[in-house]
Length: 142
Image (cartoon, rainbow, N blue to C red):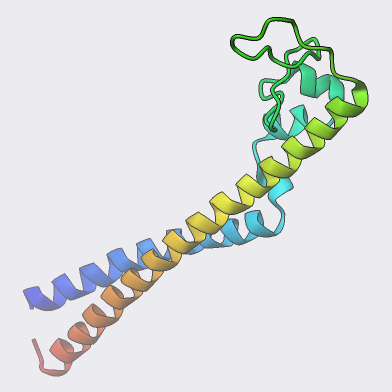
C-alpha cells in the first residue's frame, strides 16, 4: 500500500513539474518568435529613438560606447577627446544595438528552451515509470 502511495505521489509531483515547465516552454517559443515583444521594456524603449538612446540606461550597447551628450567614450590613454557622433552615426549604433539585443533575447530563449526540454524529458520519464509501478501494484492488489 505504501509503495503505491509513493508511486502516485511521485506521479503527482512530476505532473506539477510538467505543467510548470510546459508554461515556460510556451513562453520561450513566443520569445523566440517575437523577441522584441518579450524583451525588457525599458531596454527596448531606450533603443527606439536617438534621443532615448542617448538618455537610456543602456546606451551604446554596440561596438562603440557613447555618452549622453552623443560623444564616443574616450579610450583609456587617448590624448585628444573624441569627435561628437552625427545623428546618422548614432542611428546606426542604435540599430546595431537593437539588433544585438533582439539576437541576445532570442539566444537566451533558445537556451532556456533546451533546458526545459531536458526537464520535460526527465519529468516525463519519472512520471511514466512511477505510473506503471502504481498500475502494477493496483493490479496485484497492493
